[in-house]
Amino acid sequence: MSDELSVGEIGRTVVALRQEVQAMGQGINARLDKMVSTEVYSLQSAYTDQRISDLSQEVQKERDARGVLEREFEAHQLADRDRRERERQARLYQMVVPVLMGLLASAISVWAVVAK
Image (cartoon, rainbow, N blue to C red; front, side, top):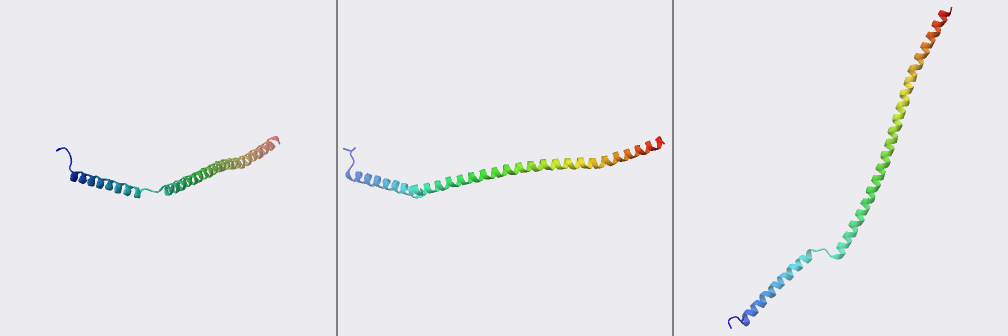
């Protein structure tokens, strides 16, 4: 009968087990108090999803605006290049035409003198 527990020992063991269960319950309750409720989590999640969607739309608008700006800039560069080319040709003609006129006038003068 030495293996059998006495009523006092069984009572102490039950009290110790009860205390351990209460401590575990308090630990679980403490962790549950730190958790967010399902309603709050779903509202937060919905807000985050909406915000991500809004930001995605804003990013797409910015990309579109950037694309338009880049195309306009390229068109401006092409127009500027064409304008500079026209100005260069105009300056060249403004310089060549008077020289040719002078040479023609000189040739006519020389021809007129030689022809007499």
